[in-house]
Image (cartoon, rainbow, N blue to C red):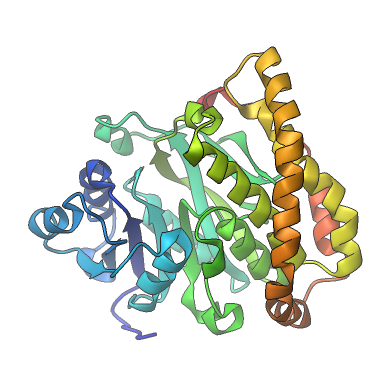
Length: 347
């Protein structure tokens, strides 16, 4: 990985056929409240067919473009883009986001505040695209995302004037990572995941190494969210549910000892069903979905266990390099209560 002492950070935006989002996203990233020469923006294209590359080249001449030869998915696509980054810190930013002008400066200030902090992520707020002016406002309330005791990610509404909080999760939609720990991590996102839970895995591996991840309320990212998409029972929705559950099981297997994993498995197995509390549906719909999820969750878990032998070597490396005490992760999960459902992200 090439270093350039003049660059503090590299911001990576990976996209696949997301042209409709790129103007708002990239406009916000090239206009951060810090000298332009201190950071770079990299647009990594997962072999889009919607003209995204040509649009970025014409509209954003200062943005570096990395053309990937095929769709590598979120995990490996971001890994390949990060390998081309020249900054000391690398930020991964979703294409369907708009960054507040203080987003990158506040994340950099947080990650440089303590030598043990090696990653940080901002507050999230919903965004109706066309509302680009929102990034000029001083938001008062946003949400923090972190793992619950059931192993899935949930949102906690919080005042953005509050303190930074140590988290287990490194929010993949917007996260800053210190490249100096790359050799210890060996990769940022597990390429075998393709998509979903790769950011949870990153967060747990960073914590296992004994480093800190901070939620930074003074940084903000506006993120388009359509909660109704999570409840559509089409081919895409079913595949998403399958990958989320399968990858969640694999993630905890990779980052836990055998006994700790077995003790945690009942909690994690309930995660898909408990998460229904956050979905925008009526009580009777939740009951029907829960009944349908039971066999689907069992199937997803079975497929996870089929794949587990593939991760044994990786797991041995993670556990042999862990600086945490025995059962630390299970104890941390158990501390995390379910937060109230926040109206900010739709219910």
